Length: 285
Image 1: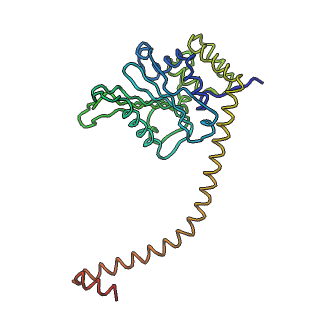
Image 2: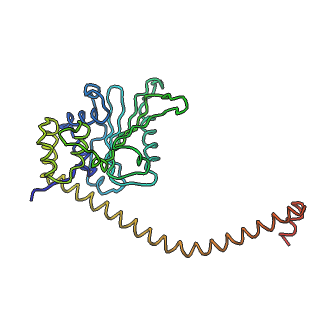
Image 3: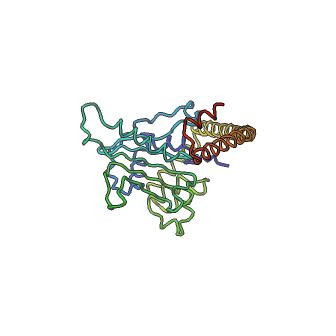
């Protein structure tokens, strides 16, 4: 059976789109996701194209693609793991991108549009009432006015692609890209080739080439085991925490009960007209 490496594995995703040989694919992907003309991103420069086995081993390594165009700074990331602080982390990364966007001597007015693009392979409560694509900006809800166009957060949920009730031949370029990234088998890639889209044909060829590359397969293997080892450690920590929490909870419950009883006594003394000095003297005795 032919080897197949899922494009949504973050190391594979970055390997594909940060490669200078695939710059045309990156430009088409960005333009499609942001609904802009490809000419607006034709001068894209990837600032962090490197990827090493050590990065793949580090579960919490951020394998994003940071890039610039003439008037934009863009951070693109494939995210496969949910977390409670996911949105907060995105805000922090976006703020750092803004802070690093201005060089010494530049005025604030020279700040470029800073865009965060996240492709999610999980469902998140924040987007439960949206379709597969969401765009957030700084906005005044009361006056229906945008504060600035220099801030944008794009989120694309792969799981919601299954809700697209139409034939693949009717997919937009954006939907085709997300379909390719979400591919689970070589058969799904072959289906994309049948629509006779030149960009998709090229992208399918790149995925197939990467799948047959021993170096890329090794990176994917390293990443797979790193994520599963971390998941096992987290699960063990949760179990241990629950066991310890039961014992601590009983002790904390007793302490909280005594504290509530003391507070109730103090309240009753105050209600009776006693001064704070009198109450303090009684409690110390």
